[in-house]
Length: 422
Ligand code: GCU
Image (cartoon, rainbow, N blue to C red; front, side, top):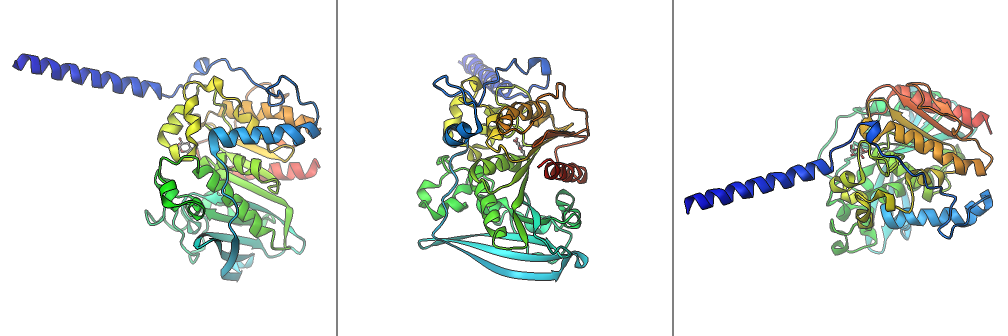
């Protein structure tokens, strides 16, 4: 009897181990180019009935909306609607911020719907010297507004609703606000957690709670996603900046890193007022094609971050070839607006080559608008050698998954380039 129990225990253990290894192998990232798969490159211009979009007008009138809807239905969900009332509260204005070079505003945007209210806190800098309307960079941040600046008296915002407080100024290097101000840009940022705390149970405290009862906001209700809530945050920033005549509303650029790099692409697809975008190290479900098996995969990202995506995406895990779109179709939804895709050489998880190939492929749609992409760039660009078409750009920065001063140098060069080529 004892032997039988022992045998059963061993069998049970071995079976458990095998299941675990099989599970691990399923999500083990591939980093060998030879095993990345030989992709089909479906064209966003081909409609399901076999007809082909041939002009920018056809794209704008028919195809663009069809593709946006596919991404909403199958991957990111829809953005929340606008609430009944939006009210801006100026909590503080400093007229000699950043050693007298900027005006600093801290604004709470109140969203009011029925008897519920929600808010997003904005940190907003405007350059002082300029007399004509200035361009702006907007973006959500990861760790709180007080982490984006070296000014030590900025109101603290909390990315996860009480979970952790991050060190003041910790991400100053990622934002380079002084550099942007010195280059004549206004900068506005808010924290992702104000829209959707980045956790499985974050939905209950997200902006979606304005519109749905608590029982519809459990981790299972994946139609209301973090990426869509964050994308809505970008639109709120645009709303706010457009209220000030000192901002050139035709030159509002959206920036986002990593999960927020994915978000920027989705925000641009939904808000045509965003004049240009920079999607930094966005990787899987951002600029990297899902059909390529390199670095992070659809299966792994959904398993770890299910609240970012709708549950309808689950059907494509391991069956990426069945997706009725590819990620460069999302890039193409930004056309003809300028779009810069940025990779980092050591960020293999995000699949730099895939991000480059996507940028190339999106060129097919930009060309409809008479704007050159980077389709004649045959090989992977060298490290720190940006490749800019008229309105599409790509670069591979040396180093890790991050946003650095070097990234901003490339971004500013791209913006100057696009301004010139218009
Ligand atoms: C994880 C995730 C990525 C994401 C990144 C980030 O690494 O797997 O998809 O881009 O976090 O947002 O920093």
